[in-house]
Length: 295
Image 1 (cartoon, rainbow, N blue to C red):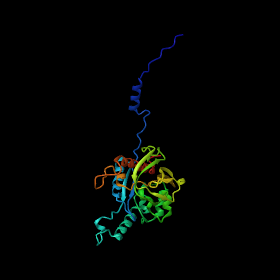
Image 2 (cartoon, rainbow, N blue to C red):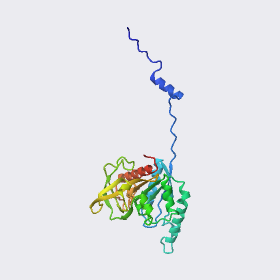
Image 3 (cartoon, helix red, strand yellow):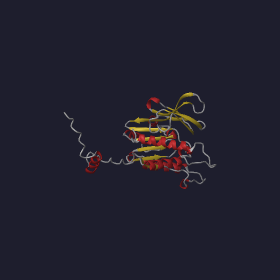
Image 4 (cartoon, rainbow, N blue to C red):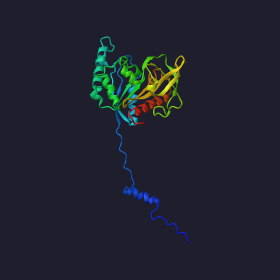
């Protein structure tokens, strides 16, 4: 018996694919564009004020613009503005504090927080006069995002629930140093570009009230940054908080950590531009994770 001949298809495969695309057969509808998240960036300070705050504000705004993942609104008060100048030519502390209280009442009341998907504390310090600190934490637990940079752990020293939320509190620091950080989670969006170790020149915080079991570690030192004493010195981490997410990095004291373009008055910088670009990716990854734009 002869084997029946193999018949050629009436329509070549390419033609079938073209027909399907024209007729919509098997076609998937285009994915709906995800609207950007809306984030409040808080840079107000009641204690020490970092000179890097304007650079931090510019960097975060630029990351938002370039990524398209989120938009930013600021809660900020610049004490050096002429409106705060006292008779002695220095900022009038009472005027500055009144302005801080007013802007936080406007931006961070329980009602106002409903406008935001997340809040960033970038180099905040002191007991900020929030209208309802516990209400802020309760808002976060509903599935919102909190991102803290550097002295966010030197904020609300008298409010233990905040320390529990962020994961620890500033104890002290010594002189700035070139720190060789250990990458604890190379798969995390905030660390996947850093390799096994990452060196950065910055002010390294030593923390208290930190419990490693409560957080997912991202960056750490195995030795004291200044003395070399062996130990566990956390630098960055993330955690769940109720249904919300928290990301914190203690890096960000220096302008040349934040910005690849910044130079001091002598035209020099400690960190090469590449370190600043790596830091920007570090915080962008953390922001995206906290906003649930990353798993």
